[in-house]
Amino acid sequence: MPESQNQSFKPSFGKELNIESIISAPLVAASKANVMMVTGQTRFLLEYCFTKEDGKTYEPVMIEMSMVRGVIDDSKKPTDPGYIQKAQLTFNIPLLCLVPLNSLAIDKVTVDFDMEITSVTSKESTKKVGENNIMDKKAQLNGKISGGPSGDKNNTQSTSKLKVGINAGPLPLPVGVLAILDLYTKNIQPLPEEKKPESIEE
Amino acid sequence: MINLDQSIPCPVCQTKIPFDTKQLLMGVQFSCPNCQAAIGLSDQSKPLVQETMEKFEELKKNVAK
Image 1 (cartoon, rainbow over the protein chains, first blue to last red):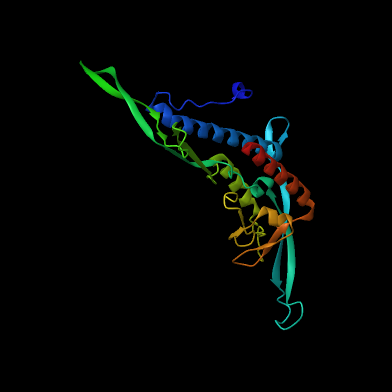
Image 2 (cartoon, rainbow over the protein chains, first blue to last red):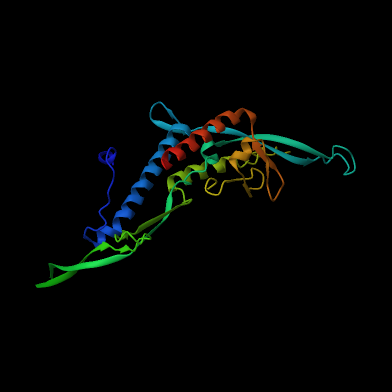
């Protein structure tokens, strides 16, 4: 809130609002925070994990990994030295695979407050079903966040309570990113060498 | 789907090898639970991964502010 940067923010908890506004305000704020985090993460992804070829196509930045594996030498006996030899090979995977993405998303929001219903109004609406007009009357609850007694005995003013708990946790990656990861991880798998056609002896 | 739970498929037997990027940067190798093949980060790729992880941590801090 740029306007409140130089001013102290005074929440008006005593003001009457409709129930939807009271409940939705923290949810909207959490949703906006999530959008900010996801946008930042996407920018990071495109800037550091991809390179832009020809100004059009994004290509993933690849990194090299090494693998060490024991290989049995069939020409030697199990008791011979060097029967199991270490074979090392390298393979490339996208840098994207090593970054713990989506660890920033909000997955749970808990809003805890006591509310006082101060007034009930009604809203009329008319719907046309077939040839008949059906009149609908919806109740609109208005209220304010109720206050609890403050700890100070000399202070008779009550303090309003609105507690918002936010929990951030890993969420599933978007389908598009998963598809990219799947494609590249399949490239890690070694392909069998193509067999040469056997020569036919006449 | 190698990113969500931080694991990559073993190039030999395709069993998932769980890893931790920070430990990979420290030179730790992670073994395949099935075929015991050990994977690690090549020395030449370490600076790039290090820089990317630092930028990622920076991003997380900026978001938290």
